[in-house]
Amino acid sequence: MDSRYLRALVAVADNGGISAAAHALGYAQSSVSAQLKRLEADLGVSVLVRAGTGAALTEAGHRLLPYAREALALEERMRRAARGDRTRLRIGAQESLAHVWVPEVLAALEYGAGGPDTGADVVLTVAQRRSLERSFAAGELDLVFQYDNGVRAVGPSAVVGHDRTVLVAAPGHPLAGQREKVSAEQLLRYDFLVAERGCTSEMLVDRFGQDMLAGAQQTLLQGSFAALLRLIGHGHGVTLLPELSVARELREGELVELRPTEPIRPLSIVAQWHPRLGPAETAVHTLLDLARRADPLPEATQAAHAS
Image (cartoon, rainbow, N blue to C red; front, side, top):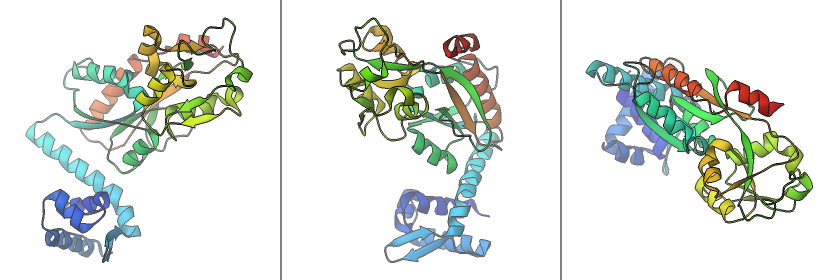
């Protein structure tokens, strides 16, 4: 099957129509239409519904789409292998992980810490969980790093690290100066900030904060992780975050950790990857090993925090 046909299908799915797909590919609209018709002739099914307002994928087209993405990714890997280029690895990470930890792991890969001939040209996508999950399911990412949300991953996955969960506020927050631990009743008096639906702070409330924050007023920012940190730093409420994501702010005194009466369990860092990545599999498994070596919360420390 001609890869141009698959590329045309993916372009229509990504751009919302044949005209927009043709523009993105740099082809005439008639050429893209002809490629799609040849694809349908090869398959014996319709993959698009054409209408005056554009085109949409049929059920068959939606079933084909992830395989088309996978085939195109494989074609690129074959071309790079034939030219002697380094393999390309498309990685996704939550913003709270990409803040500190992921760059250190990628730097170790680039500097050869995994051994000779294990490097890769890395393309890093930083986004919130739902966006990463969509991109991974669509075959646009080879490997993703996320904090464990308690949902079992489909396909190859592994725990590669752990992190403390911390309750943070500004140094001038009313709860920051008290010597005794913060009770659930005290927390309910203040806003609890969440960057957006599906973000790490909201997930941590769902998994670990129910005992402390049941009934708390949650305020959605509909913004970035950086905006969340700025607002917390200016005294606008409290939030629950992985320690990695606020390590610098805690160290510099821009934020302080509150000590709740209810203990908060550590959380896991989970990697998920696609099978059948060809030459990229070596880079993936090297990166997983480097991630485990860079575990921010070693096993002995995990046990101490859990007790």
